Image (cartoon, rainbow, N blue to C red; front, side, top):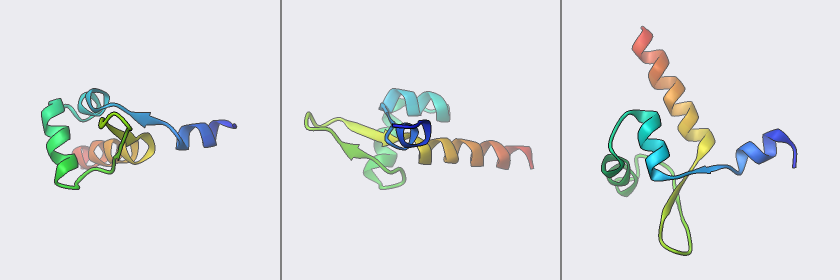
Amino acid sequence: MDGDARRAAEYLRTAEVARMLHVSPKTISRWAKEEKLPFVKTLGGHRRFPAQPIRELVAKLSDDGLK
């Protein structure tokens, strides 16, 4: 698997997304429930967030803050 394919298949945990977006894990869970963030559920019922869309959101929010 090359770097791009590996990165596309990468998923983040709730706490990781919360750190990236500077909010609490409970906020991430609420946003996921409200379908504001993309996620998949593991067999154990945990949410995992696709890394690429989350990174794009962080970049967009960072860019918006500079304007």
